[in-house]
Image (tube, rainbow, N blue to C red; front, side):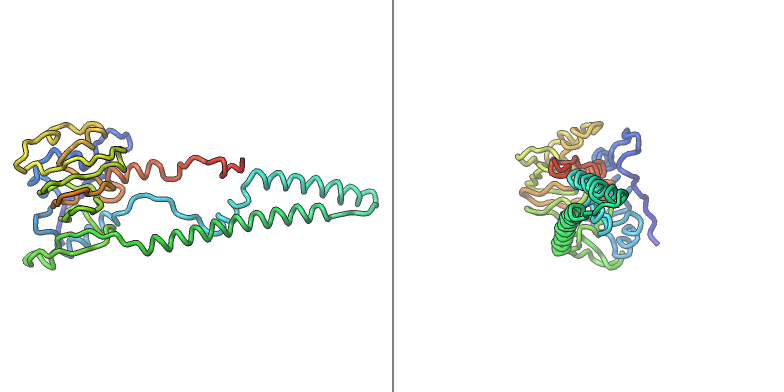
Length: 284
Protein backbone atom coordinates (compact mmCIF):
# COMPACT_ATOMS: atom_id res chain seq x y z
CA UNK A 1 0.00 0.00 0.00
CA UNK A 2 1.40 3.38 -0.97
CA UNK A 3 2.15 5.68 1.94
CA UNK A 4 1.50 9.38 1.60
CA UNK A 5 1.07 12.37 3.85
CA UNK A 6 -2.41 13.69 4.45
CA UNK A 7 -2.69 17.44 4.31
CA UNK A 8 -4.79 18.67 7.17
CA UNK A 9 -8.01 20.60 7.21
CA UNK A 10 -8.10 23.99 5.64
CA UNK A 11 -7.98 25.90 8.89
CA UNK A 12 -8.09 25.09 12.57
CA UNK A 13 -11.01 26.07 14.74
CA UNK A 14 -9.32 29.28 15.81
CA UNK A 15 -9.21 30.36 12.13
CA UNK A 16 -5.52 31.25 12.38
CA UNK A 17 -4.08 28.41 10.35
CA UNK A 18 -3.90 29.31 6.65
CA UNK A 19 -5.58 27.27 3.96
CA UNK A 20 -3.67 24.30 2.58
CA UNK A 21 -3.63 25.85 -0.88
CA UNK A 22 -2.05 29.04 0.51
CA UNK A 23 0.81 27.04 2.00
CA UNK A 24 1.41 25.14 -1.22
CA UNK A 25 1.37 28.36 -3.27
CA UNK A 26 4.53 29.44 -1.46
CA UNK A 27 6.25 26.09 -1.93
CA UNK A 28 8.07 25.06 -5.07
CA UNK A 29 6.35 22.64 -7.40
CA UNK A 30 8.75 19.86 -6.40
CA UNK A 31 7.96 20.44 -2.73
CA UNK A 32 4.23 20.31 -3.40
CA UNK A 33 4.46 17.11 -5.43
CA UNK A 34 6.68 15.55 -2.78
CA UNK A 35 4.29 16.47 0.03
CA UNK A 36 1.37 14.99 -1.88
CA UNK A 37 3.45 11.99 -2.95
CA UNK A 38 2.40 12.72 -6.53
CA UNK A 39 4.21 13.02 -9.85
CA UNK A 40 3.52 14.49 -13.26
CA UNK A 41 2.41 11.13 -14.64
CA UNK A 42 -0.62 11.07 -12.37
CA UNK A 43 -1.82 8.68 -9.69
CA UNK A 44 -2.36 4.98 -10.14
CA UNK A 45 -5.87 3.61 -9.78
CA UNK A 46 -4.88 1.96 -6.49
CA UNK A 47 -3.48 5.22 -5.11
CA UNK A 48 -6.66 7.04 -6.12
CA UNK A 49 -8.88 4.50 -4.35
CA UNK A 50 -6.82 4.70 -1.15
CA UNK A 51 -6.90 8.49 -1.13
CA UNK A 52 -10.62 8.56 -1.82
CA UNK A 53 -11.18 6.42 1.29
CA UNK A 54 -8.92 8.71 3.31
CA UNK A 55 -10.13 12.13 2.14
CA UNK A 56 -13.69 11.29 1.18
CA UNK A 57 -15.67 12.50 -1.82
CA UNK A 58 -14.87 15.87 -3.33
CA UNK A 59 -18.10 17.48 -2.18
CA UNK A 60 -18.82 20.64 -0.22
CA UNK A 61 -21.44 21.06 2.48
CA UNK A 62 -24.88 21.74 1.06
CA UNK A 63 -28.47 21.88 2.16
CA UNK A 64 -30.34 18.58 2.11
CA UNK A 65 -34.08 18.20 2.03
CA UNK A 66 -35.39 17.05 5.45
CA UNK A 67 -37.31 13.82 5.89
CA UNK A 68 -40.94 13.78 4.78
CA UNK A 69 -42.20 13.74 8.38
CA UNK A 70 -40.13 16.84 9.24
CA UNK A 71 -41.46 18.59 6.14
CA UNK A 72 -45.01 17.69 7.16
CA UNK A 73 -44.56 19.15 10.64
CA UNK A 74 -42.86 22.25 9.23
CA UNK A 75 -45.81 22.83 6.91
CA UNK A 76 -47.98 23.53 9.96
CA UNK A 77 -45.37 25.79 11.57
CA UNK A 78 -47.00 29.00 10.40
CA UNK A 79 -48.34 32.01 12.36
CA UNK A 80 -51.56 32.04 10.34
CA UNK A 81 -52.23 28.42 11.26
CA UNK A 82 -51.55 29.20 14.92
CA UNK A 83 -54.17 31.97 14.79
CA UNK A 84 -56.69 29.61 13.23
CA UNK A 85 -56.03 26.97 15.89
CA UNK A 86 -56.59 29.55 18.63
CA UNK A 87 -59.88 30.52 17.00
CA UNK A 88 -60.80 26.84 16.77
CA UNK A 89 -60.09 26.39 20.49
CA UNK A 90 -62.19 29.44 21.38
CA UNK A 91 -65.01 28.22 19.14
CA UNK A 92 -64.84 24.78 20.76
CA UNK A 93 -65.18 26.29 24.23
CA UNK A 94 -67.97 28.73 23.37
CA UNK A 95 -69.96 26.56 20.95
CA UNK A 96 -69.50 23.09 22.46
CA UNK A 97 -68.01 22.83 25.93
CA UNK A 98 -69.89 25.65 27.71
CA UNK A 99 -73.29 24.73 26.16
CA UNK A 100 -72.61 21.10 27.05
CA UNK A 101 -72.04 22.07 30.70
CA UNK A 102 -75.33 23.98 30.78
CA UNK A 103 -77.23 21.22 29.02
CA UNK A 104 -77.84 23.36 25.93
CA UNK A 105 -77.56 22.46 22.27
CA UNK A 106 -73.93 22.19 21.04
CA UNK A 107 -72.49 23.18 17.67
CA UNK A 108 -69.21 21.94 16.17
CA UNK A 109 -69.72 23.37 12.69
CA UNK A 110 -67.40 26.36 13.26
CA UNK A 111 -64.67 24.18 14.78
CA UNK A 112 -64.92 21.65 11.95
CA UNK A 113 -64.65 24.37 9.29
CA UNK A 114 -61.56 25.92 10.90
CA UNK A 115 -59.82 22.58 11.45
CA UNK A 116 -60.57 21.58 7.86
CA UNK A 117 -59.06 24.85 6.61
CA UNK A 118 -55.93 24.21 8.71
CA UNK A 119 -55.54 20.65 7.43
CA UNK A 120 -56.04 21.61 3.79
CA UNK A 121 -53.61 24.55 4.05
CA UNK A 122 -50.90 22.52 5.77
CA UNK A 123 -51.22 19.48 3.53
CA UNK A 124 -51.17 21.57 0.35
CA UNK A 125 -48.03 23.38 1.54
CA UNK A 126 -46.37 20.07 2.45
CA UNK A 127 -47.23 18.47 -0.89
CA UNK A 128 -45.91 21.44 -2.90
CA UNK A 129 -42.61 21.57 -1.00
CA UNK A 130 -42.21 17.80 -1.06
CA UNK A 131 -42.70 17.66 -4.84
CA UNK A 132 -40.33 20.61 -5.32
CA UNK A 133 -37.58 18.92 -3.30
CA UNK A 134 -38.03 15.66 -5.18
CA UNK A 135 -37.87 17.45 -8.54
CA UNK A 136 -34.70 19.29 -7.48
CA UNK A 137 -33.05 16.03 -6.42
CA UNK A 138 -34.02 14.41 -9.73
CA UNK A 139 -32.47 17.30 -11.67
CA UNK A 140 -29.25 17.10 -9.64
CA UNK A 141 -28.96 13.37 -10.34
CA UNK A 142 -29.20 14.08 -14.09
CA UNK A 143 -26.28 16.53 -14.03
CA UNK A 144 -22.83 14.93 -14.08
CA UNK A 145 -19.85 17.28 -13.93
CA UNK A 146 -16.54 15.72 -14.93
CA UNK A 147 -12.84 16.57 -14.94
CA UNK A 148 -9.99 15.33 -17.09
CA UNK A 149 -7.13 13.75 -15.14
CA UNK A 150 -4.02 11.71 -15.78
CA UNK A 151 -4.24 8.22 -14.28
CA UNK A 152 -2.19 5.02 -14.61
CA UNK A 153 -3.16 1.40 -14.19
CA UNK A 154 0.16 0.75 -12.41
CA UNK A 155 3.36 2.57 -11.50
CA UNK A 156 5.11 1.25 -14.63
CA UNK A 157 2.22 2.04 -16.99
CA UNK A 158 2.04 5.08 -19.23
CA UNK A 159 -0.30 7.89 -18.09
CA UNK A 160 -3.61 8.19 -19.90
CA UNK A 161 -6.28 10.86 -19.91
CA UNK A 162 -9.46 9.91 -18.07
CA UNK A 163 -12.71 11.78 -17.61
CA UNK A 164 -14.02 11.20 -14.10
CA UNK A 165 -16.75 12.70 -11.92
CA UNK A 166 -15.36 15.64 -9.94
CA UNK A 167 -16.47 14.04 -6.69
CA UNK A 168 -13.91 11.27 -7.38
CA UNK A 169 -10.97 13.72 -7.42
CA UNK A 170 -8.37 13.33 -4.68
CA UNK A 171 -5.31 15.34 -3.58
CA UNK A 172 -2.37 14.47 -5.82
CA UNK A 173 -4.43 14.05 -9.00
CA UNK A 174 -2.97 15.69 -12.09
CA UNK A 175 -5.76 17.58 -13.83
CA UNK A 176 -5.97 19.14 -17.31
CA UNK A 177 -7.89 22.39 -17.79
CA UNK A 178 -9.25 24.11 -20.88
CA UNK A 179 -11.63 26.97 -21.68
CA UNK A 180 -15.07 26.50 -20.15
CA UNK A 181 -13.96 24.09 -17.42
CA UNK A 182 -15.01 24.61 -13.84
CA UNK A 183 -12.21 24.42 -11.29
CA UNK A 184 -13.22 21.27 -9.35
CA UNK A 185 -10.84 21.63 -6.39
CA UNK A 186 -8.07 23.84 -5.04
CA UNK A 187 -5.25 23.48 -7.58
CA UNK A 188 -1.54 24.33 -7.80
CA UNK A 189 -0.60 25.12 -11.38
CA UNK A 190 2.13 23.04 -13.04
CA UNK A 191 2.10 24.71 -16.42
CA UNK A 192 -0.27 27.02 -18.24
CA UNK A 193 -0.77 28.84 -21.49
CA UNK A 194 -2.77 32.08 -21.75
CA UNK A 195 -4.81 30.99 -18.72
CA UNK A 196 -7.47 33.40 -17.51
CA UNK A 197 -9.73 32.48 -14.59
CA UNK A 198 -13.07 34.04 -13.72
CA UNK A 199 -13.36 34.40 -9.93
CA UNK A 200 -16.71 36.17 -10.00
CA UNK A 201 -18.32 33.53 -7.78
CA UNK A 202 -15.83 34.38 -5.00
CA UNK A 203 -15.05 38.05 -5.56
CA UNK A 204 -17.88 39.44 -7.66
CA UNK A 205 -15.35 40.72 -10.20
CA UNK A 206 -16.53 40.07 -13.75
CA UNK A 207 -13.11 40.50 -15.37
CA UNK A 208 -11.06 37.26 -15.51
CA UNK A 209 -7.56 37.40 -14.08
CA UNK A 210 -4.44 35.78 -15.49
CA UNK A 211 -3.00 32.74 -13.74
CA UNK A 212 0.37 31.20 -14.48
CA UNK A 213 2.73 28.62 -13.05
CA UNK A 214 5.54 30.02 -10.93
CA UNK A 215 8.09 28.04 -12.97
CA UNK A 216 7.02 29.67 -16.23
CA UNK A 217 8.89 32.32 -18.18
CA UNK A 218 6.80 35.15 -16.75
CA UNK A 219 8.40 37.12 -13.93
CA UNK A 220 6.80 36.15 -10.59
CA UNK A 221 4.41 38.72 -9.22
CA UNK A 222 1.97 37.92 -6.46
CA UNK A 223 3.32 34.37 -6.18
CA UNK A 224 5.86 35.68 -3.72
CA UNK A 225 3.16 37.30 -1.58
CA UNK A 226 2.42 36.03 1.87
CA UNK A 227 -1.17 34.81 1.75
CA UNK A 228 -1.94 35.80 5.31
CA UNK A 229 -5.45 36.96 4.44
CA UNK A 230 -8.22 35.63 2.26
CA UNK A 231 -8.00 38.63 -0.10
CA UNK A 232 -4.32 37.87 -0.73
CA UNK A 233 -5.19 34.22 -1.32
CA UNK A 234 -7.49 35.24 -4.18
CA UNK A 235 -4.68 37.28 -5.73
CA UNK A 236 -2.11 34.47 -5.85
CA UNK A 237 -1.38 33.75 -9.49
CA UNK A 238 -0.11 30.17 -9.32
CA UNK A 239 -3.25 28.64 -7.79
CA UNK A 240 -6.86 28.13 -8.86
CA UNK A 241 -9.66 27.90 -6.33
CA UNK A 242 -12.61 25.54 -6.38
CA UNK A 243 -15.80 27.02 -7.85
CA UNK A 244 -14.09 29.40 -10.28
CA UNK A 245 -13.98 28.66 -14.00
CA UNK A 246 -11.59 28.85 -16.94
CA UNK A 247 -12.41 31.77 -19.20
CA UNK A 248 -9.65 31.00 -21.72
CA UNK A 249 -6.38 29.14 -22.12
CA UNK A 250 -5.16 25.74 -21.03
CA UNK A 251 -3.30 24.41 -18.01
CA UNK A 252 -2.06 21.39 -16.11
CA UNK A 253 -2.36 21.44 -12.32
CA UNK A 254 -2.13 19.21 -9.27
CA UNK A 255 -5.03 18.87 -6.85
CA UNK A 256 -4.00 20.17 -3.43
CA UNK A 257 -7.27 20.15 -1.48
CA UNK A 258 -10.76 18.76 -2.06
CA UNK A 259 -14.22 19.03 -0.54
CA UNK A 260 -14.47 20.79 2.80
CA UNK A 261 -10.70 21.40 2.89
CA UNK A 262 -10.95 23.90 0.02
CA UNK A 263 -11.48 27.64 0.33
CA UNK A 264 -14.91 27.33 -1.31
CA UNK A 265 -15.74 24.38 0.94
CA UNK A 266 -14.99 26.42 4.06
CA UNK A 267 -17.35 29.15 2.84
CA UNK A 268 -20.07 26.58 2.17
CA UNK A 269 -19.74 25.12 5.68
CA UNK A 270 -20.06 28.58 7.23
CA UNK A 271 -23.40 29.36 5.56
CA UNK A 272 -25.18 26.00 5.44
CA UNK A 273 -28.21 26.08 7.71
CA UNK A 274 -27.97 29.83 8.31
CA UNK A 275 -30.38 31.11 5.65
CA UNK A 276 -32.31 34.13 6.88
CA UNK A 277 -36.08 33.75 6.88
CA UNK A 278 -37.97 35.74 4.27
CA UNK A 279 -41.30 37.48 4.82
CA UNK A 280 -42.96 34.55 3.03
CA UNK A 281 -41.31 32.05 5.39
CA UNK A 282 -42.55 34.06 8.38
CA UNK A 283 -46.04 34.24 6.91
CA UNK A 284 -46.10 38.02 7.03
